[in-house]
Image (tube, rainbow, N blue to C red; front, side):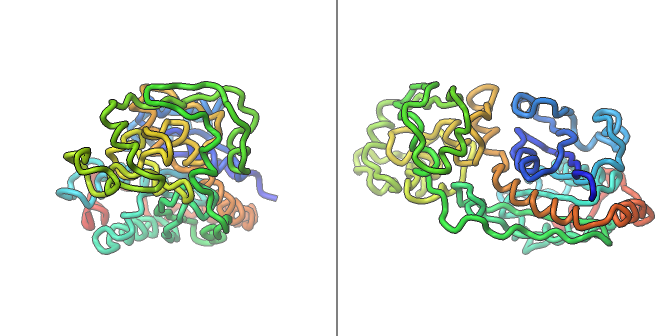
Length: 387
């Protein structure tokens, strides 16, 4: 039997992916990110898991070995969600955008460490950027250093997350190893917004509550509460009276069309000032979830945007997970997180593939280092060409 696979989380954020992989049975080596506030939250919720605050383009395999006290050969899986801003379809795309180097940095670490498996998580839109050129470029780059890799879109709601957001997932494996599969949907009946958050205490604007006032009524609520006694991160935004009056006219799942002409906001997109539908999963959780002027981020029945705790519930974090930092940062941290239940589904498939290999096969695949030597992060690659 192979030992439990160990993984390193690059661009770890608050650790949603790490949580899911741990729940699947993988062992964390540590997390790396440049975002200090997110790392503070990571450390608080992942006690005993070391972290490194660093620019990924300056991180080397020897630095990882020294920082985390593990040989490169002991890193079985490298995972992460490199920021996608350099691949944005909004505005001017610049092949010299320094943010593209973050992808190169991730690639170079994988090339140097040569883990058995690689998992990359990113935005849905990456699949169609440059008519699939960005996606295909990533596949080609990893193929060039000895990895077979495939890409697929996964809908979070299919894995028990009360959210319809889709994420682009890349699964990579060294030549000669067992191929990991994309997880089959585990949830036949989607978890709705009401299923996820309606046990939480109601709030008026500016109000905060730290105690539960009702028992959980759904399996999802029960699972998220665990044995938590104190309710954290449940504080409503400071909405003005005029905005509250506007929201009173919008029904559960409704939008700005229900607002009287005299109260219609002067700005905002057609899908702004829209309520979540209590009877469906959320569309997507973003950093703007406290702002009714953002797309479908208003509570289904209460006249306010979502709290950080409600965002965490919709992302499938348990209630004992506490987000630290300023309120603005807390929303950003939650909006950027990977839903742990999605990470759990991916992790189970990676673990299954890892355990399908013999120790001899794993050692042989990783010893083959004569494929392609890692290049400097500043050297242009296919990513620059397709972006």
